[in-house]
Length: 115
Image (cartoon, rainbow, N blue to C red):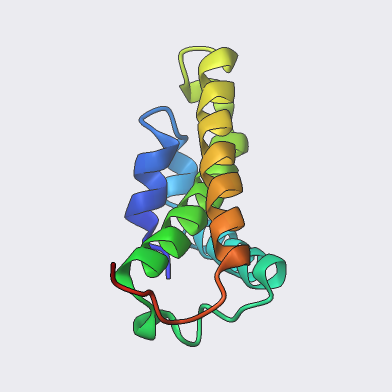
């Protein structure tokens, strides 16, 4: 559901390389993010992910990547130019998660109607 490369891009160039090389940590972050999306939306996007409309699967992937990016940033903030920069990165990811989750929670059907 979520590509680690998307999460790495969202975390930015200041992300700690140790976490990038830790496949167990990345898998744990991914599992947690996917589980949170399912729990919060009360919809199993994992099982039906390939059947979703591209716009909805994109929203799921964006939320998932942002949730993982937040964990990567919080792992070690010393690689960013300042704590303010790291906090701004976290704030951006929070915004993506908040808006994306609002869309996914309100999503009532697997069909997206054309205009």
